[in-house]
Image (cartoon, rainbow, N blue to C red; front, top):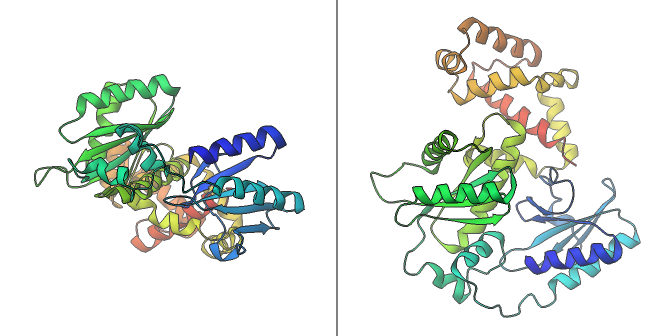
Amino acid sequence: MKRILQILRLVKEKTGVDVRLFSEFGVQVSGHSPRSGFSLPSADLFSAEGIYAATRENATYFYIESVPTGFYGRIKGCDAAALTAAGMIKLLAESGRADAETPPAAEEAVRQLLTGGLDPSRKNGRALFQDDPLNHYLLVLLTEGGEAKREELGAFLATLEEKGDFHVGTDGETLVFFKKKAGQNDYRSAAEFARVLYDNIKEEMRVELVLSTGPDVAAPEELKASYELALFAAHLGRALSPHMGLYDHREYVLAKLLSELPKGRIEACLDILIDRKKRKILGDAELMYTADEFLKNSLNISETSRVMYIHRNTLLYRLDKLESETGLNLRRFDDALVFRVVKILNRLGKYE
């Protein structure tokens, strides 16, 4: 991946062509407008050469074959110049991709496994965890305040690490924490440990933090996918429910599936689920916060009013207002599920 990014920087310097680079999970890893990128085109739209001119979006997509998984590029425009640029970048990025690589140090190797720069099937990828096999929860921590805050957070994590735990930084604001799954007396899930870790950090440190989980990892081949799903959960979770700060990847598998719908289909589904004129209610911060807390507390009126420090009647009033505007009674499980889908689709529809 590092080599691909170097090529993209060189292309931009020489030609002015700016390329957005996406992982196969649809997470943007380079380029402008970091909010975009949750609905990449279907693979069957690409030509045999790995290029797709999306005329409706006025954009050209191209696929870069890479080890262990590839990347998607997006260039604004779909004319002959954009197609030529896509072909040139693809050719440059793919040339020499099978070259032998120098075995990196352990921390750098984990970083490369997470970001796709190291093939886990190669000898140095397989040997990394021979003495202490992977059997870990994976958590992603996103900080604000730059590298200094990230280093401060890393130092704090080091004080919490037990045997088999470790952490790795992947960029100036991102840390990945690996928690060893010790046994029967350990935390029952990554989400349970994430809650404890999040509360400890918020209590002990003055740092703006987003924490998300990825699927548990038991082999080097699982690192990249787990990391990218954790990133997806963090970015979309922050967009859907910015007040929460803690996001479980299992809650965003549905969002990941919905993100693969073409934008036109997203709009069509929204029109079926909620009247277009009533969508403005989804921008009411107070009501959305109330709905999120109600869903988080298993549709329990008493518990939600307690944790929100509001009167029961206030909560009921807000739920009734939501029902009158959307036609969805969040006290019913089926309607609560539909409301969750509406929120996700509405957010996805706002991305380019």
